[in-house]
Length: 167
Image (cartoon, rainbow, N blue to C red; front, side, top):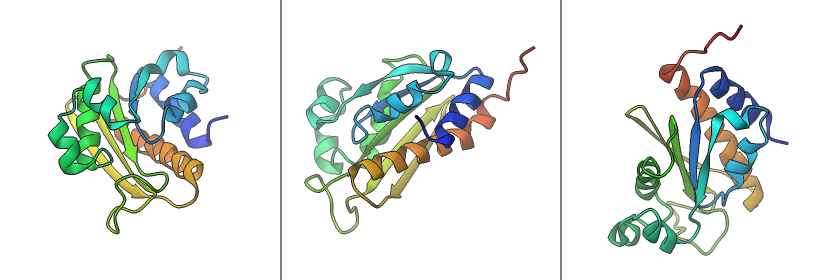
């Protein structure tokens, strides 16, 4: 069952007749899966891509190899690029990318510890980036990031579309 904030987000997207698409790395499809369990999923969720491995970010979404090498696959810059490139793959009102570090062995540093997650949202020409550091095990980090993504959507969609009254 999705969290209350994800259910609230699904309802708000539906009320505004907005659709969403995801490209996921660290969340590995869990973000799309959580939104797929919302009662409104059929009208809001367009789909998602999982590009967990950096090679897929390059081969599927054509993120330049130099960008991946320079910024690392888990970075604000690459997350933005993923969200931007997703727009050419899946038509939707909101395009959201998520990367990050849920466990050791990636590009963690003292400035970017395990638990650091990046979310980037594109909608109607607007671009919003979020960087958060969550704590706990990998699943805890992923679920906290999903809730934070739902909060981001809820914060941004009033500016995109007001609710549509349904009879």
